[in-house]
Length: 338
Image (cartoon, rainbow, N blue to C red):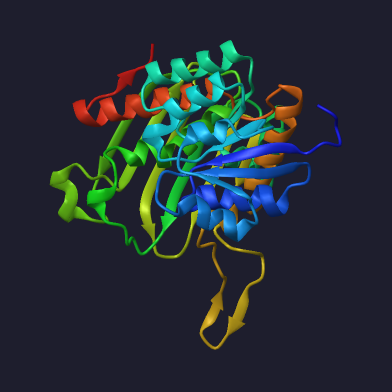
């Protein structure tokens, strides 16, 4: 592909995060053209296409994959459809960016990885925290040996409250599959070369206890032991009233690195009520640079077939921890990873 020719990108899924990714390609990226959008919901693709100035909208993924000149796709469907759509895109020979989780079972993860490998197309997965400046600088400090040998790691996700979603519409185990999956990838990435050997998890419905009997879980704490002796803790909650709180920490034999800040900036207001800071309220505000950087990386991968970011194997590794968490909560015991 000529270096000066934009990569033709298609978007599959016009929901909240899909719309944001589409806007990123259409308005924030250089070197990429959003040429088509597909979503089975009536008018979803066409409404987004009109908003972003995209000519082609489809209700069938197969029609988008047949779009003339299409080179790459962004998969932002609901999680349960990711694997099948990914395999379909790979068989069509398209470079693939897939939102997390790539799959909900290890068998489907293997199927996705195999499909991309057989087709010879790049596969990148949407773990956007790796592209955030603070997290990237934290990993660089670890690589430079500035914290010594990692001993204690921490990653947390607290979604902004008040929680207003209908718990009945949230799939079971979402807190592990779709929320903490970010933290699992982060912990694996911040502990390079180490392998997880044991997982223990507890979870409950503390935000909406009235849905506990339906299997809904909105709060969880996970402990992961690694083969280098380090211990990691991940936690999540669906309703932080003070804002969108994403943080990471690695403590080692030579020092410590911390990443993330719920405050929008270092500006602090001092007035008659004391002092205050504005906080992040949406992931698309907090991580706008990270979301953009990961798609810029994907565009480069579409040209070179070399994935710089999280791969299908990385997604499988994070999923393995999520599945162990589900087993741990169900059996109320620690789960060894084989």
